[in-house]
Amino acid sequence: MIIILVHELGHFVTAFLLGWKIQKIILYPYGGCSYFDEDINVSLKEEFLVLVMGPAIQILFILFLQYVVSPPTYVLLKRYSYYLLMFNLLPIYPLDGGKILGLVLALFVSYYRSLQITIYFSFVFFLCLLFFSSLFFYSFTWILILVLLLFSLWKEMNQVSFYYQKFLLERYFHCYSFPRYKMVNHHYQMMRDTYHLVGELDEKKYLERLFRG
Image: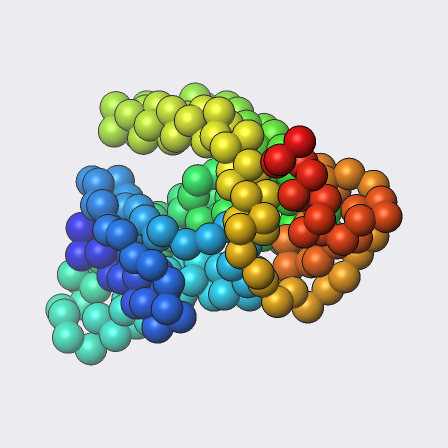
């Protein structure tokens, strides 16, 4: 639980320093989750930094422990930490690895497409994980973790339309400064960190027509 808390504090403190709206941290026996009330259109660099600081602080914490605990205890904690780290970095949403996959995709494809591909690959990797687990693991705890992970993934899949609508509404109601500019033909082609010309209309005017009819 201490390792999980340190990991989540890495996300939490980084988000706080960046001025994000922080809600809460929830800890489970198998992992944790930090909740932020931040815009989807926040900078990709900022979101990536918040994501990677969890694993980074966890690694630094384990390196620090070798100087303050006995060697047998350190070996045990190091093993637990690596297991948690490897699991958390699997490319399955909503694990950190799945979120990082979504951010990388968002650099090259539309936001809506990045959501679809992330969910699709998450299910593929989950099935692979399930297959290898059936060959090598029979722990009840591990089965419970997989069930909860599948439930979380299924829940996120049903939230894709909500995330996309929030993405568009944020752009409609707020003004953002994006580093890139792109011409597209439809709002489903709109990307993160990018301002658009949709057809012959400025993005703001296009979204005004979209939401006001």
